[in-house]
Length: 384
Image (cartoon, rainbow, N blue to C red):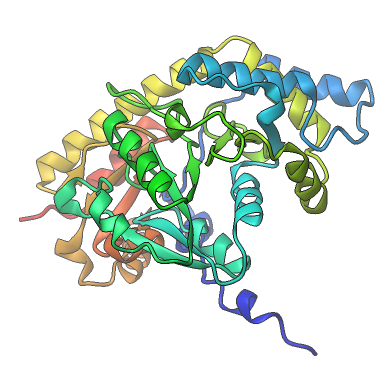
């Protein structure tokens, strides 16, 4: 039979899925390797999706989504970030991952370079390679509390660099980029005429620090604006299976966005859109309760790690803890997490899933049950 395309043959295994699927196949395993909110969905959100099906509203929607949902996304962004965007710049997407693919499809030509964080979410590299672009990892070092440094990024920029990817709050780190650093990163992009794709999946969950979108510092002038903002309701409202999010684009490219959206998915399923509308415009109790749960889980797991002498990064946002297990992982944390699952019945995501700087680290998901989390983290070997 004919061979698959070379760029597809070279797509690596997602190590998060690798360990999680092994955990799902392990009876009684405590799964702390995947970011899946565990709360029941609010009834009004479920009812809105069901009502859409009951009235047989199952035809195509506009490429960019139903107008009311676009406005709801825009209104939320205006309220939270103080950025004066209209609904015409909001494109409803089939989850944040499709939004990232959408943005990269618009911005990258074969051979272009895209700057992505290391450690960073693995699909940043996977998606850009599928588009024949070249991912270039900029380092986030432990000595800098895994925060981006302008000098480290600027040293990697070449004439082929087109896009800078930012992710705050960070998956896997739980780190949040400050307002000052965010402004400086936008200024860097302006100096070098780069686009910015800002992955803000976890914007609803920060602890004692604000979430600041790069869009705050972007121009509103067509031809000068450069920030694409990727949002999702998967984490904010636990709608992971409904595949619903938004991509906010710079002004002036709306028609191009429509054309590309048509060629990728045409539009998002209408029941998901109406459920999302209910989530954004209805009671926000779910978000508040989830934030409190993640904070409590963070504090409890942090206390266990401290008692065991295991170094970790204090999470300022998202729902992950980033912990250093190099004292037991032997320089191969990917192999170690499989061994630990087999011996202890607990799965963590290996740090190497997120880049080379993740060697010796694990990502601990804080979004599940409190007791499972404590039981799992308590099984980690102490650092003597």
